[in-house]
Amino acid sequence: MRLLVCLLLAGCVTEDPQVLCSEALDGAGKDPTWWRLDDQLAHVHGVKLFHGHVPGVQLKIETLERVLQAAKDYQLPVIRYDQIADTHRPAIAIAIDDNAIDDWYALRPLLAQYDAHLTFFVSRWYQQGPQQIDELMQLAADGNELEPHTVNHMKPLTYVADHGLDAWLADEVDPSIQVMRDHGLEPQFFAYPFGERNDELDAAVLARVPYVRATGSHCKR
Ligand SMILES: [Zn+2]
Image (cartoon, rainbow, N blue to C red; front, side, top):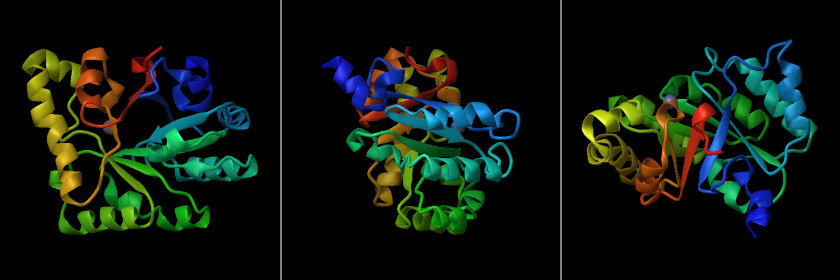
């Protein structure tokens, strides 16, 4: 049964289907590195997760466009993270993290061109002005997903070591979930800043949302 679950969900990259692992798109996508990404896209099993940061800076627009075009060419649906559990065929999910909201908003024509919806993991919501909040709500209305990425993007393991788990949850996690609920959203995922996690943090966060996302060396193996 575990093998079946592994085959059906993105969990093939983790032991735990609630702890998903994403690969960074930052700095990728330019020749000569494109061949590796293209090879991955050509051989996707389950749901392959990608994430990037500021569009046009770390995450090149041409990279995003190239991935969206390749997904189309390989007939891979581009799904949101909250669709992963119900997706039982090869697909990709693309997230963009943090709070470059004006730059996210500027992606709307590209996303419309490919009829693609992304997942945006939002940190520092409280620092955003009314225009940025409106942009977030429009992105959500377009069919994109907004999910929490903590309040101040502190390093989780360092913060817990310095202040304790309860303080991290109270300061960094719970308000980032609550502000979304206050805006009518229902968070399903939580992305760890810097991907940093351990089993203790997973247990605490998974009591609040059904799934968490890790990255890089912090992925559960
Ligand atoms: Zn981040």
